[in-house]
Length: 172
Image (cartoon, rainbow, N blue to C red; front, side, top):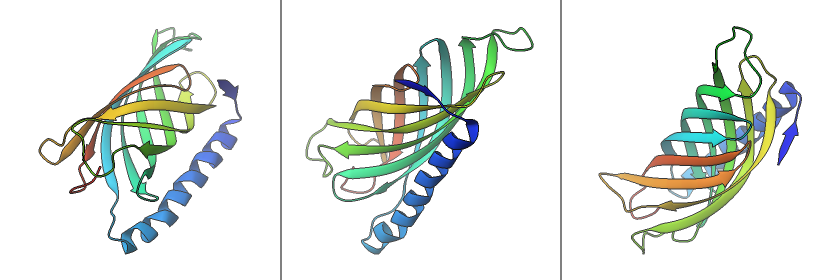
């Protein structure tokens, strides 16, 4: 589902979500939970194709739910031509996403999860756009204190992402 938004509206929604995550963080810290950093690479294919590398932080909202914010940037090809005539243009996005974990206690080697949220994306030569995001993913076994994951979803096109998150002890 694609919805054009004013650049300011998308950024306000994203900022409100990040503020909610920051408010939830002290509550999680009181319960002995910490922020979970991540690094990721995503391909988003639709009218244009974007390749983004990003970083993010997640915080637990409970046993099974994680709220995270991601900032990513890279290049986009296709879609409307850029002003310079080059086929590759700069692209950036911010996501606010919630994940529902089916195995938060590392009981299985591989653990599926599902989630959704919102994304604000800006491609050089265009306007900022807001998107709803839905995805499914699977986290692999911890390796050297890290949890690798693979995600597939929709939001501004078909999304495929590879993520590496810090493994928070005996939890996901």
